[in-house]
Structures are given as C-alpha cells and as structure tokens.
Length: 231
Ligand code: ADE
Image 1 (cartoon, rainbow, N blue to C red):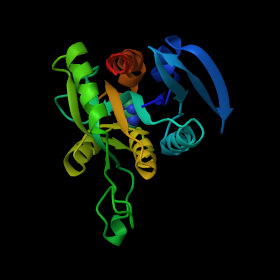
Image 2 (image 1 turned 180 degrees about the horizontal axis):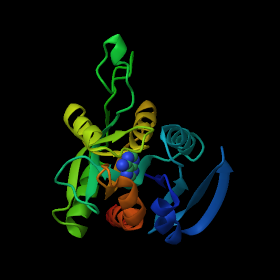
Image 3 (image 1 turned 90 degrees about the horizontal axis):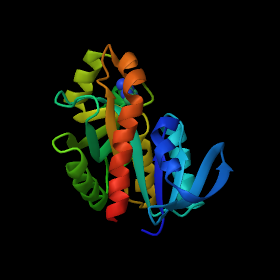
C-alpha cells in the first residue's frame, strides 16, 4: 500500500495522528480537512470524517477518488456490546454491518440492504492480522475481534445492547465503521476498523463517553501506530 488513510470521526480520535505527522499538506473538500503527509515513514492521509454514516461515506469516497488511498484504517471509540468488553478494551473489526438498516416491514432481516448482494462488509485479513499482532503486544488479553455495528444513533440502553448483541451479533457499536466499510467494498479498497470502548452503550453511556473518550481514543491510536510501524 503506497498511501494509507488513517481516519477518525472526532477530534479526539485523530489528534494524536496529526501530532505525529510531518510534511503536512492540507486540502479542504466538502468541508473536510484532508492532511497528506508522512507518518512513521509512510505516506498517509489523515482526516476527521465527522460523526455518522453520511459524513464517513462521503469522506471515504473522496479519500479513494482524490487522494488515491490504497487502504483505510479507522480509529476511534465505541460502545461495548459484548459483555466481556470493559471500558478501554479494544475491538478489531472482522466485518461491519449497519444496524439501523431496517427493511423488516418488507420481509428483509435487520441490517440487510435490499437488492444488495452483500450487507456484511468484510475487513481486510492482512489489516486484521496486523492489528491483532499490535493489539496482543500492547494490550494483551484486552483485544477482541468481531463484528462492528454502525448506525446513526448513540446507543444508551441495556435492552438495545442486548438486541444488537444477540440479533445482529455485534461486539461493539459506533456510528461510522460500516459506512466506511461499504464504500471501501464498493471500490475494492481494503479496510479495518479499530475501536476502543468509551462506554457500554447502557444507561451510563453518556457519562462514560464524556469521561473515557480521550483515553479510549489514545488506546485505539496506539494500535494504529504499532500497525504502521510493523508495515
Ligand atoms: N460511540 C461511542 N459510544 C457509542 C454508543 N454508545 N453508541 C454509538 N456510538 C458510540
């Protein structure tokens, strides 16, 4: 991969990336600031997508079309769905699904996009393996691989968590990953999503999110740094 996109949705999720870049050139498109530069010897493009699936989709397509990135790594925070995940623990996406895609009234299963061959967007195995090695080195026993669920909703309910975990088999929930994953799939570009848990998507999620987003963002960032160093 000659050029890699390293992206997150919020400032907290990208600020350590920006801080470690050199030779930065900024371009603004669709209101998004794209930073091309060098990061531990690699050509990268770093940007903040903004929150939600539309922001993430538009940004990812621009990264592919205009900046010619050959792989996308998303870093950030998520709400835990798997009960064994604690705040600060990490998830590596094996695949992503949009949990708010709901055409059940027409007989489709939850998360299924009508008329599409595929609604489960698989992450790149090489990137997953690279992340797994980085994770085992930095956070042994605290890294889980699994399905990341995305939707334009901040989840803060134990009932919803149980449903997402049981019906859609998600290990964590956030608001961008599956959108990045779908756009990457449509363009044949490898991707992986890394997420550290800022909360458990329950009744305390709003408080925990505020308290733990910085530390969780940092944990996820450290995985990216280690991955890039291993490339
Ligand atoms: N990102 C971090 N926590 C989240 C939650 N509970 N729901 C959706 N996205 C999140």
